[in-house]
Image 1 (cartoon, one colour):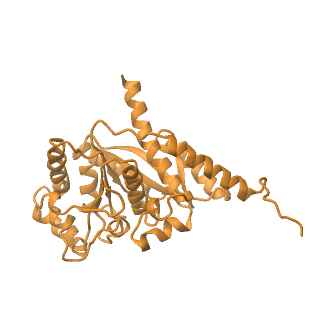
Image 2 (cartoon, one colour):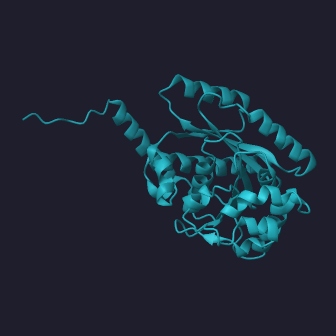
Image 3 (cartoon, one colour):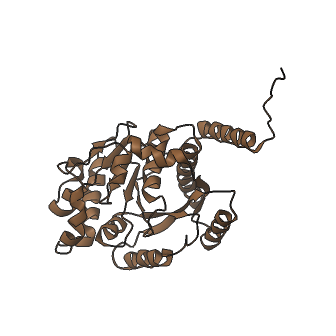
Length: 304
């Protein structure tokens, strides 16, 4: 009987070898803590671009490196809360109570079972009516920022400050998203590598500029992440090329591929970082997180 050998020249073999090399690189990477808390709003008014998936997996990637990370679920669907495995049933204290009833963030935070340093402010069904209720609130655009500023200040006075805070916004430009943008210092936009990828992006960028001008002058677009990337298609490569041409400094080199494990992880109440830690999805998000941290470290060295 002829023994069948493993052909190292096949596309699958090359792909596996590349993935192994990427894992080896990640094992050697040190992700530095930021000098102060970095607050990201993850936003894109176009639905289905991997916004929530990006939020929770980038957060989990940092937590895996031992950094202290908080996810604020500002989307009434509560998908980010589901993905990090925290309770978000209707009776649970949530971000709704922070926005409408002035609850301190400490009163609604839950610890994720995934990592010791991963926490979440959950969203519940009550948030669905918050857009209407916020209209009559005093300083309605600043509700989350006020709570978050006080929260970060209290944490900084202890030996355990927060390293990263990620705010997952709904796919719209209503008052919830505005609260997210006003509360943050940086914007992370996931862009799907498919047709119409840039559709609606100009409106989001205009909104960011308006918020910079009138509500939050420190807000800036720092990061764009290409998601659902399929290198086998000309379309995906063309979209990636177009986005990089428009935003040469903001687009990460790391890209997130289409992967079944990424999509199925939330059904297990997990991020892909825990669900399939050695898979292509987890590796890609870990690379993206390392690049986000590395960029900031490089910029600080250049400024010095």
